[in-house]
Image (cartoon, rainbow, N blue to C red; front, side, top):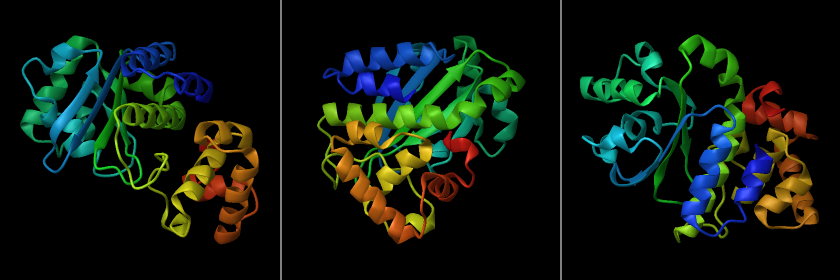
Length: 246
C-alpha cells in the first residue's frame, strides 16, 4: 500500500486526494471510508469526509463514538456492528449509532487513529467492510499495519493541504512510540517507524522529502541511541515482533 500512498502524495487538491484514497482502499476490500478529525474533549469542530453520509443524517460527527472511544490510544480497534459485543463499555447512544451502520453495509472495520506530531487535531480513519466478523478477522485484520501506514500518509497530506500547523516542518507521521524510542527526535522516530514497517531507505526518503544520505544519517543516529543494529531489531522495538513489519 506504500505505492498507493506515494502516488497520492503528488496530488494538490483534497477532493482528488480523497477520491484517490477511497478508490485504492476499495480495491483492497474496503467498502466504506470515514475520515474524521476534531479538537478537544469532548470532540468539537469535527471535519468529516465519508462515503456513507446518511450515517450522519441524524447525528453530528462530533458524537461519533470513534472520536471518543477509539482515539484515546494509538491502538487499531475492530469496529462495526459485528464487534459490538467486544465493546460493552460503550454508552447506549454510541451502540445505537454503530448499529445504524449495518444499513449502510458497514459490518466490520478498522478504527485507525492518526495524529501528526505537534498537531492540535486528532481523529483518523474508520474503514468498513461488508464481511462478517470471522471472515474479516481472517482476511483483513492481518493487514492492519499496512492500512495504518496508508492512513497516516493520507492524513498527513490532507492536513498539509488544509494548511494545518504542527511543531515540526514538514509535518511528521511518526505515531506514538514505545517508551524505549522516546530518546529519538521526531524525524528519527519517523524514519525508524518506516524502516521497521519494511520500507526501503529510498522509499522513506521520497516520503519525507529528504535524501537517502540524510535518511541513512537519521537511521544511524537512531540505531546508536537505541542500541540496535538493523531493521529487524527496530521492528521488534516498534511492533513487538517482526511479523507485522513485513
